[in-house]
Amino acid sequence: MLLGQLFSQRVGYAIHALCYMARTSPRQAMITVPELSEWMRSAWPGSSETYLANVIRRLVRGGILISQRGISGGYCFARAPEEITLRDVVALLEGVSFARCALTPSGKCSVQEKCTNFGLLCDLQQRYAGLLSSVTIANLARDMAVSIPAQNFAVPAASSAAVSS
Image 1: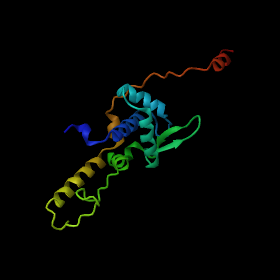
Image 2: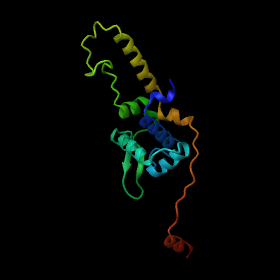
Image 3: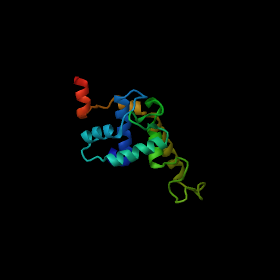
Image 4: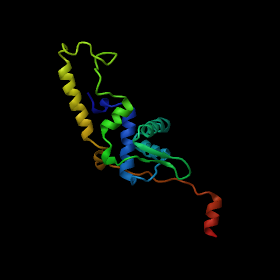
């Protein structure tokens, strides 16, 4: 199994976006989806700005990011990257519940006392949750190589004329 198969594309987008934000912006600095998308496309040429925007909205609804509207708006961390774990991101975006039985559609095991797999699966689940909890966005961002794309913002003609006067 390849490592990338452990997480969905949604989680991949989120982790990369959060790490980019942690590497390039102070905690309360606003960053926009177009800026994130430009960087994502430099790393993943086929990445989608629309899909990224949907992931970012989920991170806001889940309390990992804060959004601010307006001309100086964008997104910033709701709490420090050192406090955001992979478990937080995976649980939010994948809907992972570590309290339910993975072998039944209802999530409630009717034969738990007799199930030979229950103990082993609980142990694996606890180890997996522990590993996810031990890795923070700050940990991942620290080792991430980030090259910031050149800003290609055109200055409106009226503004440049006013500046030169």
